[in-house]
Length: 195
Image (tube, rainbow, N blue to C red):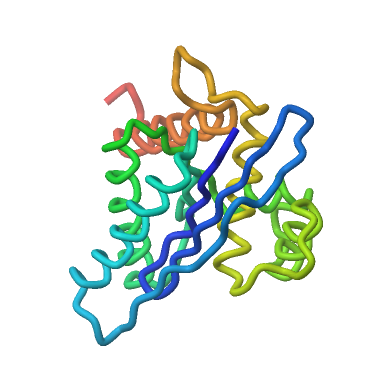
């Protein structure tokens, strides 16, 4: 399985392509970071990312694209930028018929290090070890992109997900948990059933 991992961001967007075989051995194909500056207009910054994603998808032809899902963030401007970049990435993959899998940072950390709360240094160290690299990928956004690709391939069991649902087991669990949380919240809003 070839996976393109994307760690979305307006200032630095990490990209990493990994090939993973059935025994879970992972090999780095390419890694990089696309950057833009705060001085650029928003449309210009998104165009930089869009053009880079197009080039990477066309050059490396991944089977699937693994994208970081923002789970919680207190900085609204950061969340907006990540969401905008994520949209650009998802559309680029959709145009080529490439499936996109979303993974939270804790899912990725748990898959790569065994600890869902691992710090960036631990993730980078494990990515370096898993991929048998001579030196750690820099900056951290590049290592995070590779970690996303590895985590997706390992969590997918080296298959391209269930044909019936188009999702990995981890994604289905996530959706089930979200659905339960929404149902509970709606019940709390509506109040007791005897009204």
